[in-house]
Amino acid sequence: MRKAVYPGSFDPVTLGHLDIIERSARMSDWLIIGVLNNNSKTPLFSVEERVNMLKKMTSHLPNVEVKSFGGLLIDFMRANGADVVIRGLRAITDFEYELQMAQTNRVMAPEIDTVFLTTNLKYSYLSSSIVKEIAYYDGDISEFLAPEIAECVREKMSERKKNG
Image (cartoon, rainbow, N blue to C red; front, side):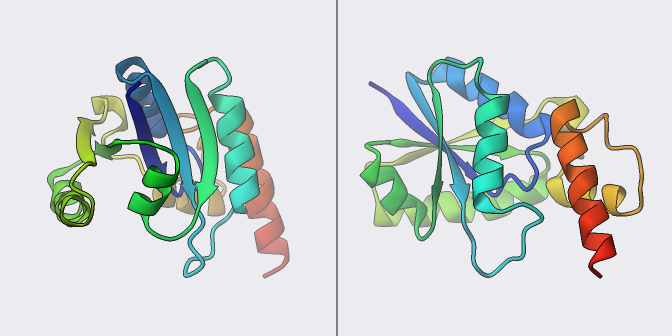
């Protein structure tokens, strides 16, 4: 069985992420979405909230599961019996960073391969950071997120602005 992992922070999960997830699910027997719990960042959503959002957004995909992880990706992959990392690329600047990570992972874990998927052109500019900035200024984020995720983002931004 070919198991793949699509890692990321998914804060929040965008339509670009969902495009990569759906395409990856078609290419692998089993896809694990690895939601990174990065203690050095202050995410908009907790890791549990991000996991739950992704579970809802991927419930139509029978070969997809969502798990959180911290630490090294290769350790998470080994613990889950996965041998392929899926990474989405929007622009050439993404490629430079992702290539370094893929090569480093390859040295540390030669049994793990990385597959790069280019994003759908309609999402090539899209990032979670951009979405959060637009939402912070009460801009329209409906083109970038599923409706239920957009509502969650608007609620979180409203709370964040009230609390300073």
